[in-house]
Length: 199
Image (cartoon, rainbow, N blue to C red; front, side, top):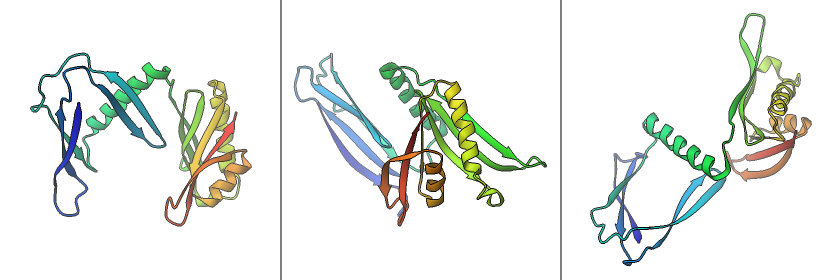
């Protein structure tokens, strides 16, 4: 079986929404070996399977492929739900749970915070924020310690984080994180660093 991808049209000039069509054509009357690929940030998955039934003809099988920057939230949720189901069947449930650390002043205003999650024995710190008046007081390290302690209580054995900020890199290295990868010019003129630490 072969698939032909054709770009049908774009929306208005300069739009980031494009419409594609995928056409299906049988190559033989026997089951064909097909490979389906999922591509994600920093990883890809290849799932081979064998078509069990002969498709005598499929010129009527037409799919639409849309590229957009304004997707329906329900569609985005469905993508995550399907991928989660696939991963659960492939390697087992992730046990994903949020981890949030909050620092407030006496008036209750948020002054610093960490947001991330634990999954598959790892802590991932997605966001770390420190207000300007608290910077230089090792607040990042204090919040990371709190998040790491909670991750250990959950049975995690490692933590990872990424940044393109040199000051943040210094803070994370001071906390015991080590670089294991980088993306140059992300953003332009900087490098995005990926750091990890054993817990």
